[in-house]
Amino acid sequence: MGQSVSTAKLRSRRDCQQSKPKSTPLICPMQAEEAGQLEPTSIDVSLDFISDLPDECLACIFHSLSPGDRKRCSLVCRRWLVIEGQSRHRLSLNAQSDLHPRIPSIFSRFDAVMKLALKCDRRSVSIGDDALVLISERCRNLTRLKLRACRDLTDVGMSAFAKNCSGLKKLSCGSCTFGARGMNAVLDNCPALEELSVKRLRGITDGAAAEPIGPGVAAAALKTICLKELYNGQCFGPLIIGAKNLKSLKLFRCSGDWDKLFPLIVERVTGLVEIHMERIQVSDVGLAAISNCSNLEILHLVKTPECTNSGLAAVAEKCKLLRKLHIDGWKANRIGDQGLIAVAKSCPNLQELVLIGLNPTKLSLEMLASNCLNLERLALCGSDTVGDAEISCIAVKCIALKKLCIKSCPVSDHGMEALASGCPNLIKVKVKKCRGVTSEGADWLRAIRGSLAVNLDIGEQIDASASDGGVQDNGVEFPPIVAGQIGAPSIASSSAGRSTSFKFSGLLSGRSFVACTLRRLASSNGTSRS
Image: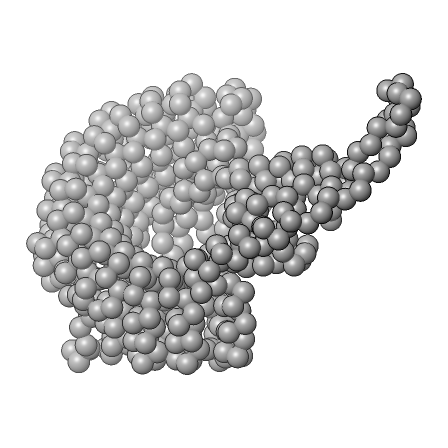
């Protein structure tokens, strides 16, 4: 069981393959005739060079393939079936109740799994405690676990799992029904836990009777905590306060007064680098406390209408390392020029700025462009004040800007004309639902700046290039510009409460390398496999 057993099995299989006798050579008369030789040249067209590969090399190739390709490779022969199963470290299973009797056979084949996802349809009956305990007994080296809609798991099952899988480093659970006792069992038995993500945990009692969660032995190792849609997310307060090495804190739609908790958090947790708050009850009081996080680099304020210019200014004045700032003002007009000017004066390292539902004017935008010389990514969405004059200002002042997104703003073709001669480093422009911008204006900009990618969506029909990468009607995205580029951002906004953020994705070239290698081996063999 585990990786040691898998390695032994792989080596024994390799030795068996190497001990097979060579095939008898066959005659190739055509090649002999072309070479002008009297005696025919003999080659062995039946040689299988892939079978001569050590099992470890074949397992390495499998690791570079997609899950679908791995499944197809496992059907080639028995050897590939064994190696694929014993070298698979990541597994995702349909966690319906009928999975239970198949667990022994599944994990006999996949005996080296370290990352496991158990997902159940919300309309189906999920696995229970017995199945989870059985899995934990066969996957004691598990480091990552994802649970989705496993509503039949209880505190008892989670407690047994935590004791068997004490090396767990990442736990993500959503729409489950176990409660505080099950969560505390994980925190008390998994000292290596670094990432915790909890969404819609139904078993947590609402109100003052809620059992506190944490800190436990895991608090010392935790780096990331993400809480989403919890009736009483503040019961995680002891865990957050006790996680002294916490770097990232994300809170989405968690009820409760967070103004009371943030002063206690920042007093104990001094190394926070990222804070993401979306639709939670927080005001300038909470922002004043957050301003004491001197190492803060990333701040998201999404639909927090009680936050004003004063709170944003307090953060900007003390958090001078700020690199990424996302603000969705929800059309509340509580944050505007005053707060943005404070950011411009105190945060020279700003690289990414997303403003949604705000009404900045040329005054604040010009100061941001002049002072934040490293600003590379800018998104202006749902603003009534960002027009051609503001875009012209950005074109003149934002020398380092690489990606620009404009959505639902009163911008016209004149603004596009300004971009033709400004922003020398600009490589991507996304314009969506700006009625004043026409397809002719976008085509003209493309013609003037041939290297500039311009995506236009006028709201009636979506341009094919703009929808590349999964753009939704309620969002805007910057897909990768150059093949192989890592760190291409995307922006998504939603009035339905979805988070607004840049998402970065890298393009891997491993599959093409593997395909090339297999083709070379196949051509050397003279045969092809389907």
